[in-house]
Every structure is written in C-alpha cells, then in structure tokens.
Image (cartoon, rainbow over all chains, first blue to last red; front, top):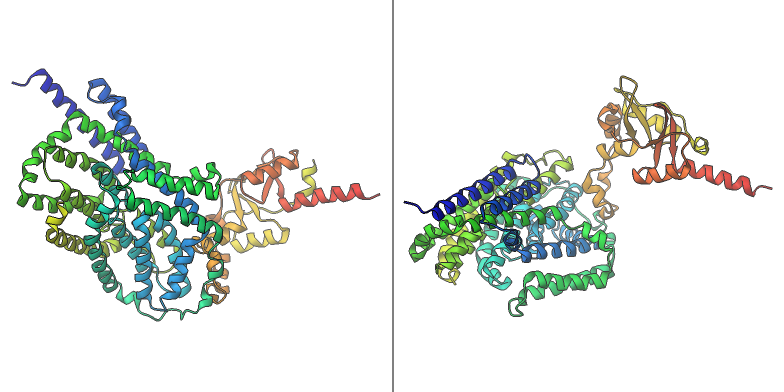
Length: 442
Length: 154
C-alpha cells in the first residue's frame, strides 16, 4: 500500500508531466509564438509547483542556466557590431572571385566559410547574413541559388555541432555537464569533420546537374570589392575583441572561467573600443530566443523538482551501466534525438534530456559518451526537414524571396536532399562514434 | 493654412487601374504616391511609386548587397519588357494599407514630423473624409524657401 507521501510524489510527477506536455504541445502547434507558449508553460509550472509544494520561485530562478543565456546575449551583441563593418560581405565576394567560375568550388568554399564561422558564432546568425549574399552572388553569376542555400544551411548545422558555442544545444549540454570548449572540440571535432566531408560529397552528387560550369563567365568587375568593407577601423576593433573571445574560449577551462564570462570580457572590450549606442546595441539582441530558452529551463526545472526525471534516470541506469549496453544506448539516443529534431525544435528535447543524463551521472553511470551522442543527434537531425533547424527555414525563406525561377525550396524538395544527407551523416557519425567509443567515454 | 501652399492636387488610384496609369499620375504631378480609393469611394490605402519597384524589380538580396554589385554586372538591369509587363498589371496588389494623412489646418512642422514617423517623403491632406491633395517634403521646403525669399525682398 502506498503512503500519503508516495501518493503526493506521484501526483507531483503527473502534474509536472502534464504541464510540460501541454506546454510542448502548445510550442510545437505554433498556435501562439513559441516564446509566448514557453513563458505561459513556465508560469503554469511555477504556479502548480507552488500550489503542490514541489517547486518554488527560488528553484525556478536557479533552474535558468545563466551561462547559456549570457553567452548567447554577448555573442549576439558582438555579431551585431561585426555585421555593419562588411566583414561578411567581403568574405563572400572574395570566395565568389576565388571559385574561378566553377559552381562546385563556389558551393564548397561558401559552405566551408559558413561552417567555420558557425563554429564560433551562432549558425543561425551566420546564415541570416550569408543567405542574401549567396542569392546576390548567384543572381550575378546566373546560377540557381537553391543548391547553395541548402548546402550552406545543412553544412552550417553540421559545423556548428562541433563546438561548444556553435549551436545552442551544445552550449546547454556543455554548461550542464561542465564540458570545456576544447573538450567539446576534440570529442565532437573528429566525427563532425568526417560527416562534413561525406555530406559535401553527397551534396555535390545530388546537385551535380545544377552545378555544371557555364553560367556567366565571371570577371573581377562583377563584384565591387572596394565597397565591401564599410569601416576598416571598426572592423579591426571588433575583430580584436572577437579574437580575444576565441582565445578565451580555448583557455576558459584552465582559467576557471565560464564561457559566458569569456564572451563578456570580449564584449566589454568591444564596448570600449567601438563605443556603440547601448540602446541600439541591446535592440540587436534576440530577446525572444533568450526568453524562450529561459522559460524552457524553468519548465524542465519543475519536472526535475517533481522527481520525474530522476525516476526516468533510475530506470535507465541499469541499461547505461553495462558498457556493452552503453554503446547501444548512445547510438539509440543519437538516432532518437535526430528523429525528433527533424520534426520538432531540438531545444526543448535537449533541455529535457539534459537532467535525465545528469541524473544517470549522479548514479555513478558513465555518461560522457551519452552527452556526445545527444549533441550529434540533435546537431545532425535537424537537416532532414526544412523545419528541423532555424537555418533551414532562413534558407527556404531567402530562396522564396529571391523570385529567381526554380529557386523555391518546397518542403518535399528539402526532404529529397535532407533525408539522405541526414541518414548518411548519422550512419557515418554512428560508425565514428563506435570506433572512437572508448575515447568518447573519457 | 500655410500647408495648403505646398498642396498638390492629384487624381486618385482606383481598383483595376493599371500600374502604368497610376505611375503616370505621380510623374505628372511630381508626387511619390497617391491615395487608393475603393469601390465605395473611401480612401483604403496608398499607391506608392517606391512600393511598385520594391515589389516588381528590387529583391531584398539586391537591396542588402547593392554596394557589392560591380560595374560589369550589366545583366542585372531588367529589360524594358519586364517593366511593360509590370506597368500593365493592376494597382490592387501594390496598395499599402497604412496611410499618413492630416487636415489642411495642421502646421508644417507636424507634417514634417508625421512624415518622419511614417518614414515617408509625402502625406495626404484630408478634410472631413475628403481628399484635398498631397504634400511632399520637397514641396513644403519650397514653401519655407519662398517665405524666406519674400522676407528678404525689400
């Protein structure tokens, strides 16, 4: 027979689960904006927790991962200062000139640039900046922007998956598991690099008919490189601040520094060097995204406080404790994460999975390999559909806006390329994961 | 009533009117836009020269990267046939719903401030629901310059 306390604990878990599921249903239904839905859910969770006694306001505040929120805010402000300098414009035009009239080279170079930038800056921001530039380059060279936009989005998602700061799920995983920038790079770098190369090869094959040389024969006067950089002095100053941030990312663990603090050191340097108008600069921060993340942390914090995630962790602990089963658990986690990330936003899934894996850690289970599996799954899964990642949606929108005949990317057109690319990427990632399993276990 | 000194009286755009005809009115009267009046005779929006080009010939990537277009990218200039096709279409899908307007007894400074608020270089003068004409920033500047010259003339 159950005691009153056990009945109460059960009720807490049921209520917390119900609020979480209702909130996620509202977020994914898009009846109201996802940030509004998440805030509503967070308020409901705190209210229910206070009424039933399993979640307090203090716990809700502490559940918000300030490292994630502040790091994203700082990077958004740094990018906002970098954009008007014309650095991205210059990079894109130099790449276009460098490709020497070969669309295949143009695709590889543009995708490589976007992927490398996505390793340090948020990949969504990178695509927002590069997508219109790509359309313009294609317009001038009389090429269809479709293969370029799709490749950039797909490969920036893959590139961003390799670093702690490249993708918000990685940041959340790294912050929760105290994984340093270097640790993230050396563990995720090898599988992501192999997946990247295989994906580029596959994209070149899939788009081979649209990448035949023969558009406009380019000459240097097709692009005005002289006007690309708008303010050289501003560019050097903001690049100096960004360089400092990157150096601090590599050293933050040794310096016992949160990545967010490293970003804020660079930001404060940029604020001194550039003296921007604070109101204008803060207006460039995507507060909607930050509030969405904060609300999700509060929501999942409530479920965690109810004991439900701990119970799930308890039930999974036996599976994860056996080394042979741990590999299988990691692979299942990777593929399930990828499948879910294809159809729903990967952030809520990541935020929910983090405390479950953390609870396994608390039970003495080796969880290092599971963190990498989760990061690979959510990072690669979003490529299969046009709604799987924000970068994909931006590419689709930009293609539509271009008005260039044949450039429109329909959901089916995306899946025809995205699904094989994702499946091959996951297969390659699984193979590398299995080969490097002992290394990934730490 | 200083505002009336800068007023330009124009015909209005109506449903089914060709874009080319509406543009001709704007060019003939030297105004960047005219009111769009619906079938019931109510002002339902504005026809804007700028908006016609934005919708028909200026994709957002070209606007964002205009400074990057080199002098040899000649093929980006749209052929005359494109504009003939656009000008034959009706104005209906180019209409902007929000309109900046004021009554004829308003001050010039209010007109200037409203233009800033609407990020526009012109606005409509409407009295009791009746369209009187268009005032433009340039037209109001001419009024002010004329006043200054009048004072300086002995």
